[in-house]
Length: 478
Image 1 (cartoon, rainbow, N blue to C red):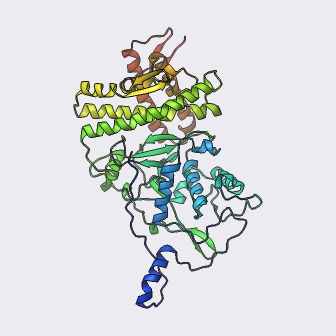
Image 2: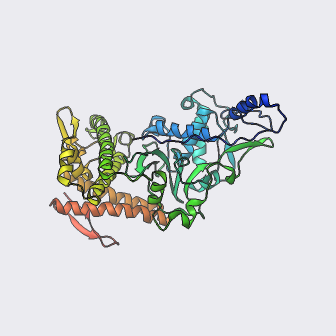
Image 3: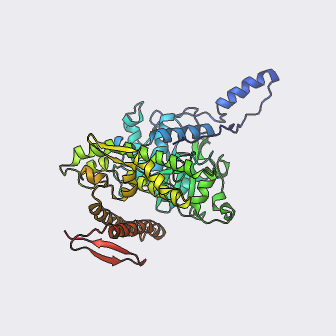
């Protein structure tokens, strides 16, 4: 996957007016480019969360932040650092951790309307440390911040941006609905992904857990609720205190994603964003090769994760929801593999590529799932829906070699997810509940088809209908 490319533009420079002779102009210009001009002296307290000195957010600092997110945020980032999270915690925590590392200003508006930030001294009684993850003062402030913010405070701390490769970068916030958000984790500009943007996401409940890596997916944003693609606001020190810059003074600011003209006759926000970020029209065969390369990498990276999980959990010690299960499951990884396989299938179908040739190519790619066993790419392509994400399952089940059992398991998982969404989000955010449930219903529809095609049968299995009219396998008794 090709990393995101950022055109290095010159930063806007605000200069202090003074008369200088021409020979000294270049010298002063160099100084001004590297050092912001301040109208007030900053006196920092020894008890504040961290000091920023002369460091301020600039376009270049935003790009450095994006590179850090792309290179450092992984699915187990919050597990390794023992930080409990839900969806809104992810963008806040990532921004504050980087700001702490780079000694940049950071703030957040709490639920009760108070602006807290790096200057806060509420935690002055705690010791600090040069490394953020060992800094008790910072970690305590961060945990308090996460408990005092949620998706409802994001509109106060962010601004909408233009949709272009230089502004939609890793670390950008995707505010999907009033109850859910994510951050852009990677930007792919070589056609190797189903969408050029991949997001890191989490959901309730708040706990130490893995992030989910997903392809960009969002309903059309609403300006009324400040939804869409956003970035965090910058801070300025004025009149003896810190305050946010006005929204319209930020370099990436734009309201274009809320305009009807943004869609140019189309209606799909996901597709329009993809074309804006990477407008290249790829040759179908070239696209197939690149997507297969991405999937192969994901599959080979999955092998040691499955083997380690099997070693740790095969005795039944990793019950779903436990800390060990959170560490060793492959739920989000498998979801992304399934989506990419579906994308690959669509490319082959829509472009009428030779299926026999595709099969032969896939058969030549081995995936060594253990020291004495392998499967081919083609096997996973055909049976990717039956990959088990549960670390307690056998190696065979983990790689889709027990199809009928996995159809039942995944049916139960999808049903549990729907029940969870109904319980948590139905009253809080009906539009998000409907959006998420539709995705799970599509999964159930496919599971039902596969159950029938594979002629699977277990005693006591029954079918019922949901409100969309699709028949799904709902209950089994062994």
